[in-house]
Image 1 (spheres, rainbow, N blue to C red):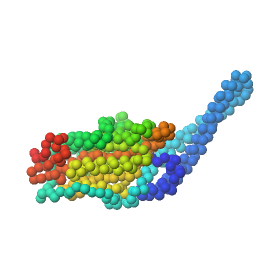
Image 2 (image 1 turned 90 degrees about the vertical axis):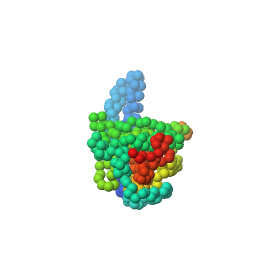
Image 3 (image 1 turned 30 degrees about the horizontal axis):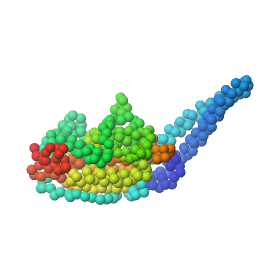
Image 4 (image 1 turned 120 degrees about the horizontal axis):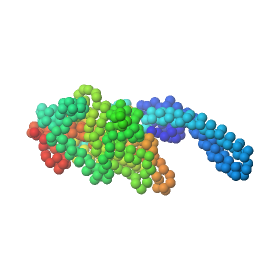
Length: 425
């Protein structure tokens, strides 16, 4: 979330920049500033009362030692009056703190100055594109038809076992899925990312820290008896490794990668756009996360984007990179690039990755700080993350784009991982 200090010192900037996200913030910003002003006045009174209590407490001991019992009694009486004022004001202060936090989490992150205005995905800007869209043979099949032809993905069986959006991967595609995960992890480690195997369930504080709560509560699977949440992305546990931590200057940047299954309830819509692997409740994903000094976070964003691009190039998929407009960005991001690959049989672009800079928005929620080079001052770090990559739509595009009348060929870079070159039975 945005800091109260920044909002109070830059109300016009906050209001005007959030218009790029099509968010009208005037009323909310005004209420935050008013509430903060009231809170600070009460905090000042509480601090003054407590300082007076501390001073009187020291004086009481000295007066008693000097035999000045009457004056000591008067000091004790004054101390009692001050403590009563503190007792009266403390709940009001706590209530204002809670209300202020409720307002702050309603305010989106400010988009970076390079983010274009726009309302929906059609207003996003093409950054660059690459690869060649394949010309398929007559009668080429969609990936869900290929799945049935070669008996490699069973959507009906997944529906029987669990429900819609939980496919069963079989045979060579199960091995291909595993190959993709290992390939992505190996590439990340070679690029300097530290591999982590995190939990796939998190507590409420972790879900709040990266912004899934309260904003995306309905998109997450909740384990009621333990008040835990199945993760929608490895970003949540990986970034929360640093919650309430102070990272030494010499340890920046921190680069993490992790493979996890991911769970999202949002997949319940219907229609041709969500058929097959296009939108699932459970899917596999390799994530990369960066914790960086604020002065270098946008260099890191570009580096992460270039890294993800070379993964798509190695898989020989036609792709394009889009800079998201304000209206198509997430609530928490300051700047986001989306990666899309072309699925030839469906004749459509499929989003396979988002790489974002959140600046200090998540850090403020989780108190993730770094210590400056002088070893004294601390500030909020910047957090970044990207899918590198999400498997279902990558797999869908690979199956469709690489199909021939004799089978589905495997990209050469994956053959050492799969142990086979073609799926044909």
